[in-house]
Length: 280
Image (cartoon, rainbow, N blue to C red; front, side, top):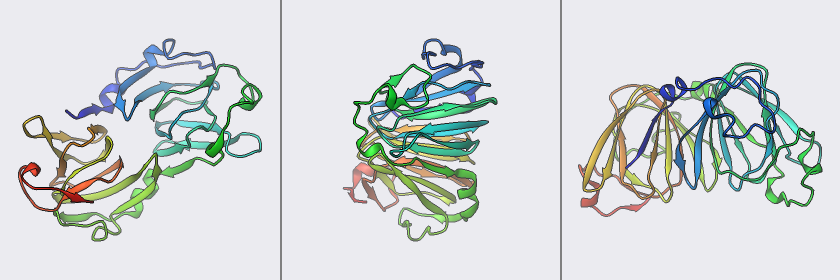
């Protein structure tokens, strides 16, 4: 079964955290943060706050994906041998924080953030550099900057692809789809299309699809037969590993996905199990 999440609906249930400190645990932030679901050995979190101080320094065993839905956040991160660097993240921006990188957030205004993360180590002290408290931790490949992307700016560069079919290739869609960045062992994709349907496909890990605007229909094989689910703006779906699925839509829409390539079938069939897949 796919996990389908309406972010707007979940956001409406949240309270507001008025003061964040490094000692603010998830339990203390109970009313202002919610677990949306699980994703690839980790969790999807949605949180809101206003005028907060710095949170705790933390690090994760895999890349963390951050999406700023409202407001502005300052990301502090250790990305080289020098002092931590700061990056301003505004609404509509995403950031990929490298695995193992020490980082924290703070802000002065009202904001809302969604993240895909795997919990790791943290330091609940308000210090300027986390390496002062944890000098023995090997940062390894974490010594690199975050990848920061303005989704609105990237969407503005894309054209709307019309009349998609199961045989449409990524090359055919040039100008309407973009490989935004590497994420974990896969990629982040952004696309705009209208009318038609995609090929049936399956992935080596769970796929995260986030509808930014418009409406799209997800067909997915659940238990004994394909089922259909309508996804509107602000909705997200976690497609299970190995599940055959496709999308179709008559409307203009755009979506971002975090995916790992797998197999696909470029034939328009009602049930992909009738045909053997081939490498994507």
